[in-house]
Length: 292
Image (cartoon, rainbow, N blue to C red; front, side, top):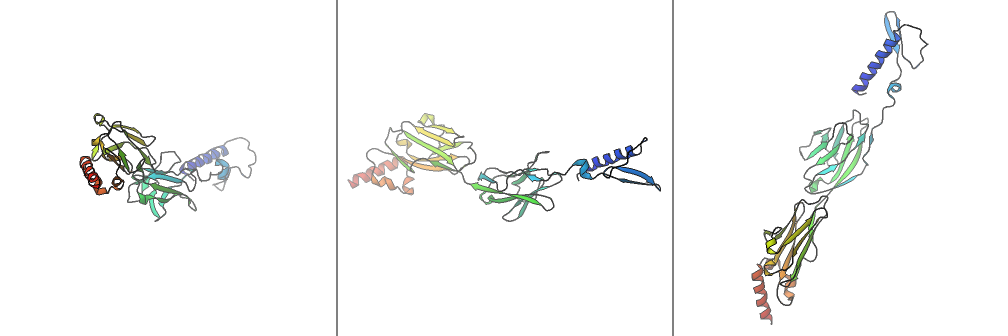
């Protein structure tokens, strides 16, 4: 019985006492009504059952479905819900099942890992477990337990994914001078839109290099970023990297050359790709002349 219910019950008893000591005719008491009488200087009485005054105590009930799956990406914030109705004096605890580690009791965090926190607004029925800066090791089953006799629980699973960038097409692109260079980068396996996507040419960030013929457009909600160079020149050859703020980057190497595409370019080694664009063209030309 809660403190408020106890107070209300006492008030009801006082009202019954006042009515019982009043003047005037009274009808015989029913078995379930309150009666008072003085016998040998002692006050005795009978009271109606508690449930007749307040009704049946509502049963605790989880509104969050058992075995709910929450997916979050590495580095983001995960919110694992637990909504329970008619909690009364019950207390919510969160437990990590893989090691039976007690994370929170009520609004108090018991784990030494302060990334875990119970979120609850006053008078709400929601006791969400918040996990900040999610890591791969956070994946697994979590138990939302409410104190009762015996305790009752539901189990929820946190899946952790690693968002990554992906540039469409092969990892190497071959163009002639004057051709249009178009690259599209998508962010996959993501649970939230990137705040930004940066493009790098070798080690230079080129999002704002309009004077060099580079045009970058990004649609965060669609998880897409496009790089366009309408007229590509020799200076545009090299490594291009798409770097979202919340995902693993992706790279592609662009070759720009005159003449036919030699077979040797199809299997360029990583060491060979580190050559500057100008050195690369000279080396390619010399090799082609020797073979010929």
